[in-house]
Picture (cartoon, rainbow, N blue to C red):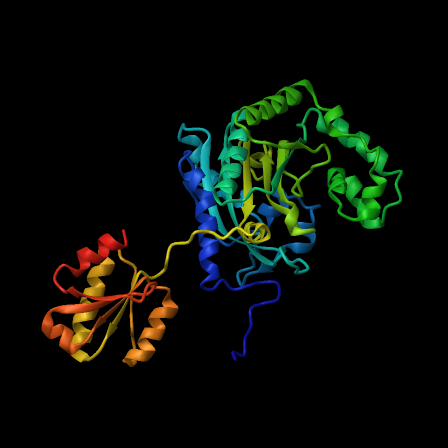
Length: 420
């Protein structure tokens, strides 16, 4: 056993489970790639101030969960706790918004880090696929992203998820609601830390999961009653576009996101089979974030979907993905001359697109055939000295157990067609 173990709250992805994670990432990103979104990759760490300004200094992410450190050169950096601020920073730095094609549509995939109490579905290192549409204020963009996420989940076979939808208002109407909410919250029996939150960001109190807090929130002012006409019209169009597309959603007037930058449309994907960690993804519109981090006014919208929690949702529904076999052919040589010839055929098969593995290490026939069986290969290709003299190899169907001689000339074409 190794002296070292993965850090607390993290995990290693290893075969065969890792194949499911790769398939989930592929399924989530597939609709984005056919909808004008280009891939972006950002560093795993950024300037602390990027997240302090963008995510919000009052959020738990910044105050309690962010992995922050100082470099030898004195720079204050943080492992990225989320993707939006980094992607927007990268787009601004590269001046993508000045190239005359707005919105800038980007998707990303990567690992993110938060110092949290580890539990099933909540890790200190986690994986997300995200999408951002930067530089346009259009209800159709908000609807597009929700539709694409819904499409991705359904393509995986998920059915028992729900989409929660709300509007958080804008700079015009939210201050009015904020004042009304603060007045209500100050009359509640709250602990000192939550009272501080009431002063800094009262909307986040609505997101408090503690039962004793939620009980007191009954009768709290609702944002929908304070929306300005523009926000009402905007939200109404988002709802109409989703309905027209056949996407089922639930209005949730208490839904807020845990990050300060959200405005107007906010949404969350939840799965009731995951217990307390029911959110599998979410996002919304963040029209003021660009200005918060020193850029121009660029109304934007985006989401991030958790790969880890999506895998847990698949398990909860008993959905087994149809994953391609990692090995189609397992080649077993008997003898040195046969080994050299068969290795050449393996290389040809791989170049022809046939997933092929080889019995390395000079193991005997019995051990090599056990390895072929463990590999999950459809066929075992056995070549001995006598076969070589006859110009054939023995092809064994690992499912039926049937075996037949196959001419070495034309073997690549024959196996390619069988496994096509």
